[in-house]
Image (cartoon, rainbow, N blue to C red):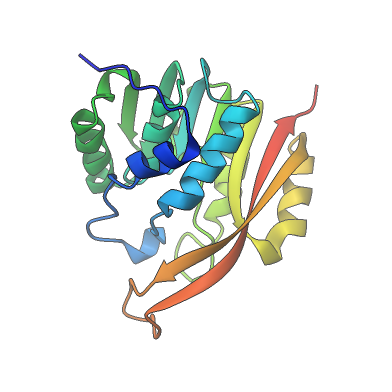
Length: 212
């Protein structure tokens, strides 16, 4: 049975999220990068403060190894679903949720997000940035569209330079940007074409609320 964990400080949340392992074998065609625990905890804490987590149903689209899925449960979400096309990452997330005693509050689903048909109060997503010329170059648009179908509130990561496009896209989907959070997102050397040990990408996380 899952144990009840109550997080009362953002630093405590970050320390818990540090336990979640990164992708074991990152796949370039999925543009997989692990969200750092400090960034994940900040977004989750802001979402919690705005009333979008506690006692809410949350969906983590492209959940990877589960950092937003598990983090949402730790902050009191009533129900959380983590959806990812990569079976290996989902298994890591499922195992970690069990280790942390929160597996009974989470459903992990291994499938393409386009095939997910559930609904929720809040979606949190860190879709592929489209920074590489890979098969899923426009995957962010798929995520944006799906997220607005699922929930009235969405938190979505994007490269800062695409902010204007992303805002217009969400507006066309019936969403209104209510909050913006900016971060320097570290990308370590992960794939064969990476020349530097680490680069930092400026990203923006938008809170979108579906207009009535």
